Length: 143
Image 1 (tube, rainbow, N blue to C red):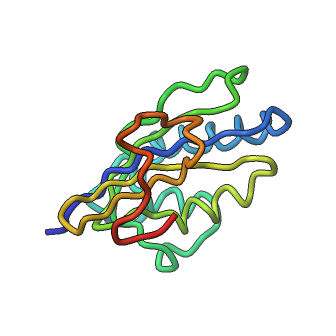
Image 2 (tube, rainbow, N blue to C red):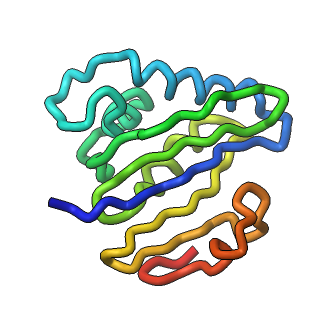
C-alpha cells in the first residue's frame, strides 16, 4: 500500500486565456461523469481519465491516484483549484503536459507526503498559497 501524497493545485491565467482555462475546467468536470474503460480503484475521478481525456497513454505518466476535490470556477477570478491524492509523489509531469494543451494556462501546486519527507511548493511568490508554513520548498524534490 502506498503512502498518499496530498496535492493542492491552482490552475490560472493572466486573464487573456480565460476561454482556455474554462475549457480545461469543463474537461476536468466531465471526468467525474464519464465512466472509465480501464479497470481502476479510483473512480469516479481517476487520474488516468485525465490522461486519456487529453490524448495521453496512461502508461506514460503515473496515474495511481484521483482528484478528491474540484472547486467551482468563476471565470472572472482567472483561476480554479483542485486537490488530488497520488501514490508516493505528485504527478506534475501529467499536469505540465495537460496545461501545455491550453494556451495561457499555468499551474502551481503544493504537495505533501510526510512518509518520504516530500514537501513541494511551486508557488514561490505566495500568490495562491501564502501561508508562511508553505514558503519552504524542498525535501526530496526541488521546485
